[in-house]
Length: 280
Image 1 (cartoon, rainbow, N blue to C red):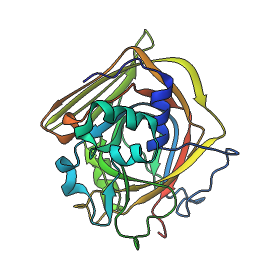
Image 2: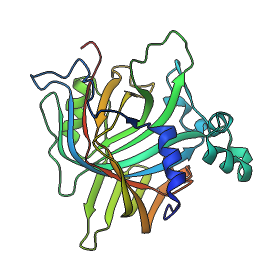
Image 3: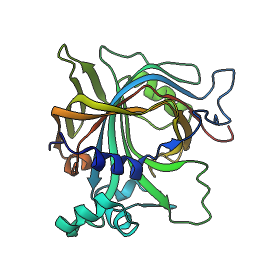
Image 4: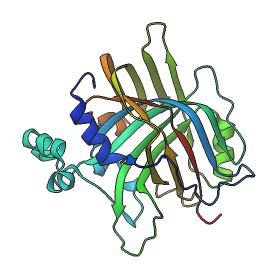
């Protein structure tokens, strides 16, 4: 599947529908688990390719906790989101499909409770996150946009074990991201049943900046009951459109490989993020 040049309005609306960036003062409220001891999640100097993916919920329903439901294209269209309405006029059979994004990210700093991974050359992380909402009105999801971690791949198996020991969801995956001499970013994910290749040539104006900020709650899949949701706060997103030779190629039997990229990707960088498990 390919995602390439497209108009800025489309991906901006999709971004707002999936990961709202709130205009503010640039100050963020740190989740309680992050303190002077270095506990919690700390991310700085990230660089990432982000692709927006529609998926068939039937293929991942076993990963959905009982207290959640997937937000669908039809639901966004009914709420007045223009790109969703436009998409359904040509693809009416996919109204019940879910909204998600796939990101491949390398970071200058990534620590959990003070420990960093042992990154291989060009090592990166990859996350497949779906937009969800409560199906149980009594469920307390915390502050922030709830996102279901359908996948979180890290290229360091010992670090994956460390994360799980501390109650954080992750699995091993061979993930890479680098910038070539021509300025194009190239990423890949290789795991059982899935091969992902992507290219991004950042182009056009940079949006966001010091005053963009937001909060999210990252929820593990249903089968990982030993892992807890993570509340994160971030600020300083810079975003550019991926144009030129930008593309995604998804192959394999994994549910992600059967998703659809409805529009262009973005290159995101420059933000800081902190997080942790609420109440720990």
